[in-house]
Picture 1 (cartoon, rainbow, N blue to C red):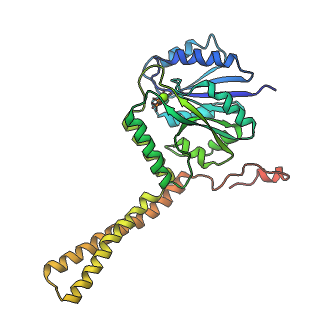
Picture 2 (cartoon, protein in one colour; picture 1 turned 180 degrees about the vertical axis):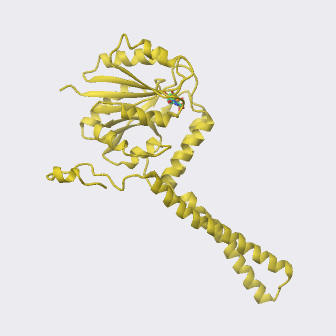
Picture 3 (cartoon, rainbow, N blue to C red; picture 1 turned 60 degrees about the horizontal axis):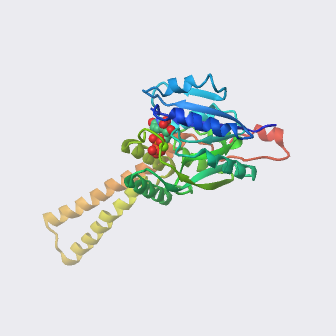
Amino acid sequence: MTEKISIVLPVFNEEAGIKTTIDTLETYVDKQKEDYELVFVDDGSKDKSVEIIKSELENHDNIKIVEFSRNFGHQLAITAGLQYTSGDAVVVMDADLQDPPEVIPRMIEKWHEGYDIVYGKRKQRDGETVFKKLTAAMFYRTFKSLATIDMPLDTGDFRLMNRKAVNQMQRLREQDPFVRGQVTWIGFKQTSVEYHRHERIAGETKYPLSKMIKLALDGITSFSMKPLQLANVFAGLPLVGGLIYLIYLIATGGFTAATVGITLMLFSVGFVFLSLGIFGGYLGRVLDQVNDRPRFIVRDTVGFEKRAKSIHH
Ligand code: UDP
Ligand code: MG
């Protein structure tokens, strides 16, 4: 049977280039041996993006559109897109052709070799500001030192996932998903292909600094509890300082209103931070619970199919 590949494309105000994207993808698809569907998720575009995609429905029967009621953000557009796919494998890519379709056959090849997830690793990024590249590089490295998952450096959302992985992605119910972190979190056999990330074909980036910051904070708060624990470190300084000072006062007999005041202040500041740290520790656990992720995921079971199906984690 012919394999089917779904391509998910989140779209936000891409009227300037969306026609070129469709033409390029359809030309690419025609030359492939697999069947393809293109699932466009319109993330509340205020321009003519949807009309342009709709006008292409007449010429191509493999185009699908999911329309959001407003702008929910790139990450949720991807999340929704996955749910509307029916392919044996799903590829997520930008609608601005920054992620070149020529990379897809290399991803498929890795998938055929037995990998469940193949992510694109950017070895070069064109047309992006030094600021964007620098902050992105810093973010990935900070994230790596904080997070409980081992997310590969310098990868975006351009990747192929097989049906098994896509099904598991749908079990994650985070309100503000950080998709590339989730993909790492679900595990499976993952590998990468390197590619050269092009300049966007038209229009401006739809990721202003405010959205980049939100993405970074969503990533950190959903996959690391370390910042919450920092309060404990802050608490240590005034506590130890206060103690040393107290010993010094006892040894030298230097008790005055001022020195006692300083000691009390150091201790109280320390305890405020300490209690914040403890509070944070509990809040972190609550956050984890509210996120409601499964505790573990079984990739496959052999020999006891029927019973295994009724096991819930
Ligand atoms: N996008 C979206 N919702 C948003 C912002 C962006 O669906 O709120 C889409 C956008 O149309 C593009 C993809 O997500 O297809 C990635 O955005 P963009 O190319 O602007 O980001 P960059 O490549 O500059 O990081
Ligand atoms: Mg882009």
